[in-house]
Image (tube, rainbow, N blue to C red; front, side, top):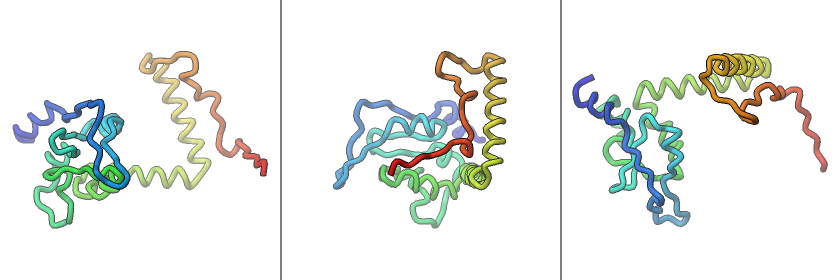
Length: 164
């Protein structure tokens, strides 16, 4: 990593928390959501002046030139079509290898878990063991009502009754 990239990484993403973000002048006004900082804290940046978001990882590690329409939207222009935010993430992920690999692995895992209730149960047991170990090592705080893994039922044990 060159000195410029290192300096950007040291400063972290620009994530100003505003009381109100500007509304887009559409038929259905939308604005930036502060909760996106929690979801994408490692790379999401917001520009007050442009009312747009940028991707720090895309800027630092993405391809510098691309012929794909909109491929540099998170780097140069900024993105503010809030209704299409998730779609833009998927499209942009193809340009940044590490993000693309993450989405590919996530899709693979979700498809495997959905395909089999046995696999779902195995993942649930593994998660319960992980949480138990974290509690034992004081890595996870607990209080009444917070840790309810032990009372969760498996999906196949749950019956849905219709009153119609």
